[in-house]
Image 1: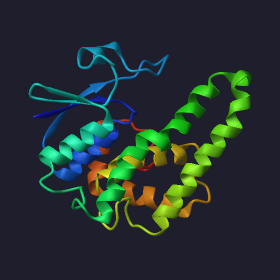
Image 2 (image 1 turned 60 degrees about the horizontal axis):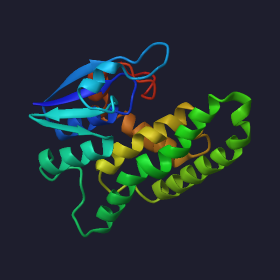
Image 3 (image 1 turned 90 degrees about the vertical axis):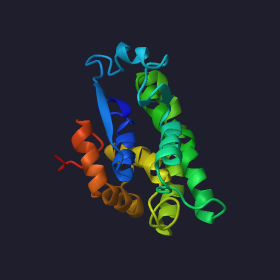
Length: 212
């Protein structure tokens, strides 16, 4: 049985969504953020040395990092689902956006969050960070204008990865005027598998406001 070590209100929600899309059986071990620091609890370090979520366990395997988890589940348990054929143009897009989510796209969003904690000391950095966030969203908007999903005409692991940064941008008001991005997030939020994952995962500030 696949076990998801799931931190409330976190990126591990994506793993639950993937499992629901694949129709796999799994169990969840819930962990709650510290109410003061908003950080993951120390109990997660007993599962993985970094003490972060998501982490999955399967038999004696312990797999951390969202991208690695998504690739593992699709490769070993997906039965050909959620991945385009190798050698296709869609597969190249799949590979690109699988890595872009936790690389290019999420970095300026995290920088904005951390620099914001510095108050006035971080003020000089905000224009450059905002410029980089806009660059990333502009590129995503342009891509989604011509594609139903990130890797072509069908949903894939690339969509599992890319939904979180877009949800985070929307929650912070950064998607105003980006119609394709907003339509995409709304489309994901209406998927039955996504809604089932929300029901099982618990509180998630970035999900649809009328869910559950």
